[in-house]
Length: 136
Image (cartoon, rainbow, N blue to C red):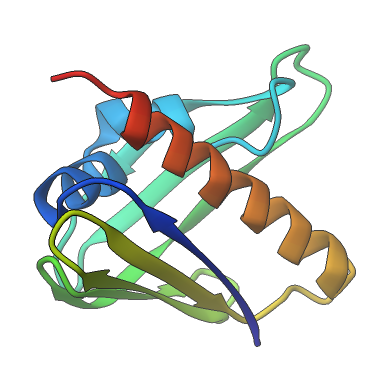
């Protein structure tokens, strides 16, 4: 299992909304300026499906990150199973004016665990920046 985490300096309600709403996911779900997420569908409930299309901006590569939610507890945890049967979870630890976000997931067999950890760490760091810079 790979685990990445970060502390987001914002209240839980803001962190949760920006993590889960498609219009926000499209803005932070990338590991570098070369990537973007042009399409998001997100039915956030147990049994609900999600699909995030991640692509290089130059169109040379891309993939769909998709699966089914197995457990959703608002402001606390999101667990899911990807369509390749790997499992993952995201925990939100509410500490008043900040949230500790921890994502744990099974790595693929195609990429090195170190590369996947680096990719996910970059996405979580991008999320932190997006949340902390976001003005409502």
